[in-house]
Length: 220
Image 1 (cartoon, rainbow, N blue to C red):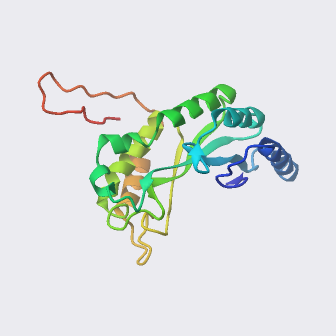
Image 2 (cartoon, rainbow, N blue to C red):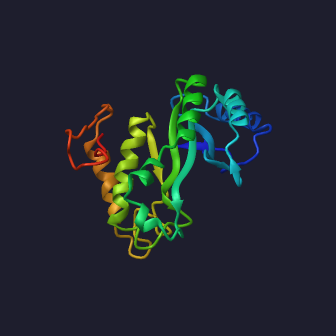
Image 3 (cartoon, rainbow, N blue to C red):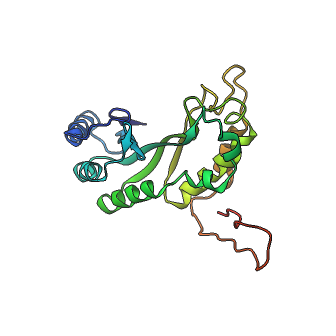
């Protein structure tokens, strides 16, 4: 279990000091490192801060201030908005799947790994679409292509956890919000957990010259 300070906070001023104080408080209560809860953060959407683009310099300064106290760097991300009328047409495309790990996110993860190479990274909240997802899409087998690809994409990028939004609620839950029966993505998560090992191999697929398979299949 873990403590997290705030949720998608848009102001970085003094935020690192608050994390330092929280780390000291946690350490004073749980004296043994073996039983001490993690401190994770800062659960920001790495693509936006409020309604504007991510501010790389303030985020980098925040990372510098917390690199000794945070156990896991966490962020939130959704590939689209649930009410997007084009979602059904886009959701199975390579362009949509590529949104799981954008160039901005890769840059921020690279910065964090330089500053705190021993710390882990988690996608602490994510799904194909935000705003409760989209009925008939994010709660059906249609979403499973996104979810399987996202789990593999993040694993290949050395992200050690994908915290799905959500277990129960909206139209993006792993369970049906009325019957509590598993939605298809629940079984994707179970298969990934049961079948995948802890080593990630750099698999590639290159269609033969003249092949009708374009673009190349996504392999992991």
